[in-house]
Image (cartoon, rainbow, N blue to C red; front, side):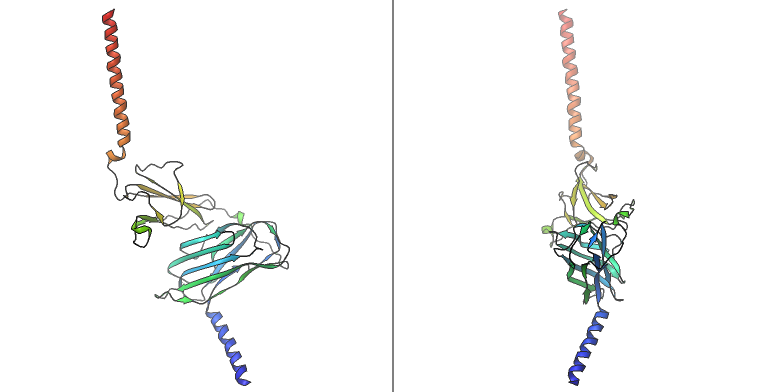
Length: 301
């Protein structure tokens, strides 16, 4: 009997120790009211318990009781570079993964924020749970850390006020970034691609747009909404590449990447030169034809 009690106590103590030393991914707040007459923000936060980490990933599974999600914001995130920016898939899963080069240590630091639309529920229940979570330590070996998680719950007993997420004021463009052109045997069959990423500390990054042009002139209506990495259309690397980062308030940051193998001035302006020559030739021919007609008319008179 004493052995059994000792074993139970030891197991309990060890479980507390493991929990205390584990990193965590948690919803904040973890309980929301059964109805809300405005948009409601719920943050997903990370705590590392004093340890330096360099990568995090996970999935948030939404139940049928989940309110409708309007958007996901990643401003002020602990993540420096997103491998998979938090996004809603099939209205039931939010996947995310990112890295923190050089390491990150912190408590109760935001990864991203989920904005729920106005809603009303009639029953208590679980809204979402964090699954397949993984945190890697910045120890040179990428050791997997222990992770604790919580659930997001709707409760009729909860009643609180929160800041309306629409009160965020953002008139600042996303941060300056440096897109990189590269290629790899492990990606796109060793074809040339471009990688890019930046942050927006106010409202978060909404999306990226790109266009390639050999003459360096931006063409309205030619922008493509893309994700990184992006397979380049011009595999000869003769085009200027423009990348736009757009935040959730519509502010933009435009970055221009110069071609590695630029075309000659004649090659770039060949069509304009040909058109100009044709116009000049047409004017000359018209002049001589008109002049000859006038001479014939004068001779007949």
